[in-house]
Length: 92
Image 1 (tube, rainbow, N blue to C red):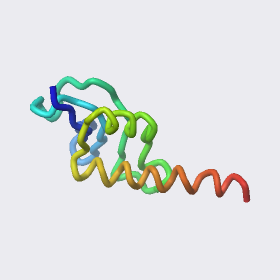
Image 2 (cartoon, rainbow, N blue to C red):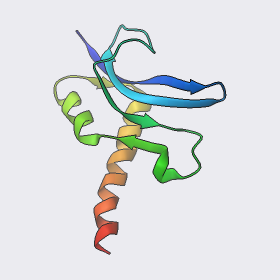
Image 3 (cartoon, rainbow, N blue to C red):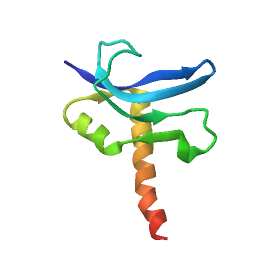
Image 4 (cartoon, rainbow, N blue to C red):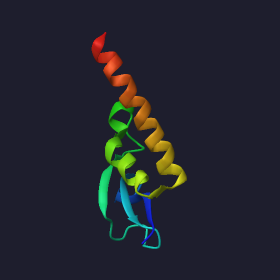
């Protein structure tokens, strides 16, 4: 069973909401998934509220062989940067 970290579309027409999920590679885009890692709201104006992702769980799934898609990889990279910047902002 090959796993992928990919986006699953939800939400209304012209108002997408994406779930970042771990799912079987050959499964349908909006089909069954193993675990939900977070959400991505591309139309949200506030950048802090746009991405909510559990980076630790994403790294765990990648360590056991799940491969992220190009888009989910860029979102994970962005979430890592935000997580690294958050403790620095809290100290200041």
